[in-house]
Image (cartoon, rainbow, N blue to C red; front, side, top):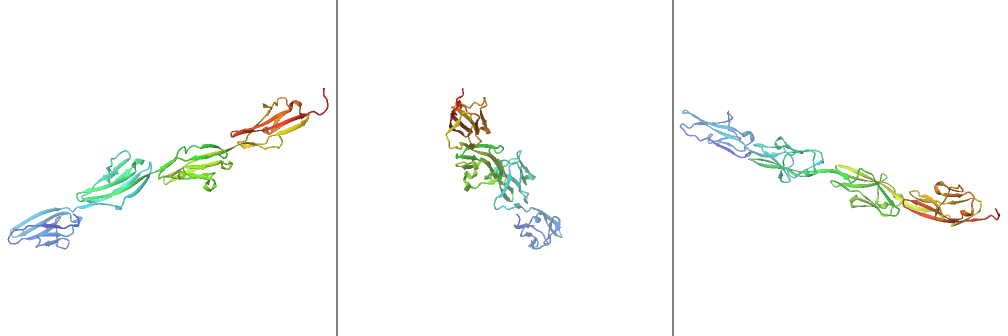
Length: 364
């Protein structure tokens, strides 16, 4: 074993006392502190064995009677060593579907056998795991989530064993449910609106919300819940209409989802302040219906509960229904006129009672 003592003995008998010479791989050894002759060479003492001391040693004894020799084969074992920091596991990260190489640069004498373990179980080469150079490299091709775990390379020989550990994390870019399609939301004014951003990824992604490209501030009446997975507007207003985006980010990438939000407002009709109008027969009169709402309301007119008849030309509906014009009022035009404003959010109506008065002239 390296750094241990080597003591080789050359037993000698004979008269006169023979001379002893030691050889290393055929070269004579001169006694020194690295290789010391003891008892006139009966012992060769190497106090601190090194790899370079591995060799074939020979002691040769000589006197006038002849020569004899004895050989020793010395192999200095070196326990396995592995390059790198072995004190703690080395953290390695790989993005899913990418490749990662783990190294086990081991040396020793005799050369150690290398074995790879994953979570304590021997690694078997497969379609996506290759073990190369006798174990000096383990390559994960097209990493999968199941490849996450602790990998250990154990270098073993008769001289001992050493290991290097890796903690491998497989990173998964964020993926938002339905993220590749625009979602459309319609909400009634003053109603609750909830937008969901269901996202997966490793490490867990951080989520931020934007409205029309601007980062959303919770102080503006928004609530961001469940670490960003939900955006809540308690009472939606017209100003909340816009393009919302949730953006999920981690070290492996990012992903976004967009929501188009429209806040609908039921129709309202601006009051004229007059629920009754009067006109002299044969004179013109205009009835107005100024309606607002989101989306823009459509306007229809009723007379005494029936749709207004514009076929005869005396009655005209103009400005998309905002104006009902009677060119020459007739007695039969008197009645209850109703303007109905309708949109996707609801409908409302306003009634006007029209009276037609005679002009005092008799017409046969």
